[in-house]
Amino acid sequence: MRIVVALGGNALLRRGERPDAEVQIADIDRVATAIAALAIDHEVVLTHGNGPQIGLLALESATDPALSASYPLDLLGAQTQGMIGSLLLRGLYDTLPGHRIAALVTHTVVRADDPAFQRPTKFIGQVYPQDVAGRLARDHGWRVAEDTTGWRRVVASPLPERIVETDTIHDLLAGGTLVICAGGGGIPVIADTDTGSLTGAEAVLDKDLTAALLAEDLKADFLLVLTDVPNVYAHYGTPRQKPLHDATPTTLRHGYFDAASMGPKTEAAARFVERTGGLAAIGSLDAAYEMLHGRAGTLVRPDLPVVG
Image (cartoon, rainbow, N blue to C red; front, side):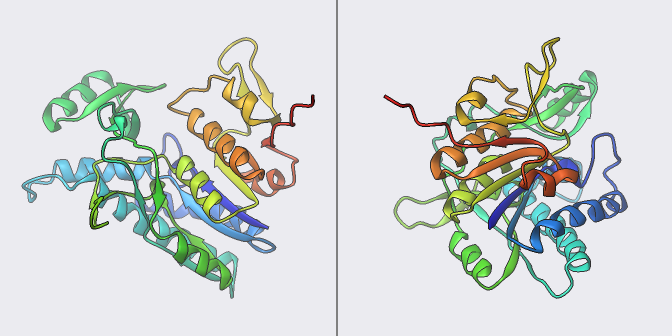
């Protein structure tokens, strides 16, 4: 079975943890153990988020007196791909001895006229009190918005249109390689309509939507969306809240999930299942193997055809 795994950025830097290198290195064992259990018997493509990491690099770049201007988000995204990809690769080498593993710098094409460039909504970086967030916004020209626990920077997040390295990823899989790619949704680029040349875009992509596109292009059988909650909850945050163990694209689309948290995950799962007829699941990293076998998380299966 071919599985595309979308690993949440908080797997390497959990909520409330300091963004120190040793913290992320320590968290990698948990990730590697979960992914190795899948890779023993299946083809695995591993993608990952980068929200905490790119936010940290963006703040460092904005406050570095040696720079005349901050590094653009596309280059900071490339840096996170290298850092997180290296950590994942090293952890998986230890848990999958003799297994071929490659971390691939990956670019994702977006449209220059995507309306998301005018309406930044993607949270990156750490949570701040409102007064601190306001000061950072004034000092660095950022846009900030209120998250569930405080205020954070928001940036543009256009829809992924095409993954540049898809054919290379396919070739690596055909050679028996576990591929780590499309970190942070891929490095956002805009393709020139005449020459095809690529230019970086000031954005951070949604890794779940890119994972769904990648899974579709690779003809994957299963999309596994791993996060820090055990499953999707219907009526989340209300007295009617309950775990959703089984779902279809239709039920997910009627769930009205928060666009800043569960919404992109449910939309990614719905898109993949609708377009391919495959299966998807959303749930906790530690239950990845159980999710694959329908014993944990929220399983997303195709809608039943309408009869008559």
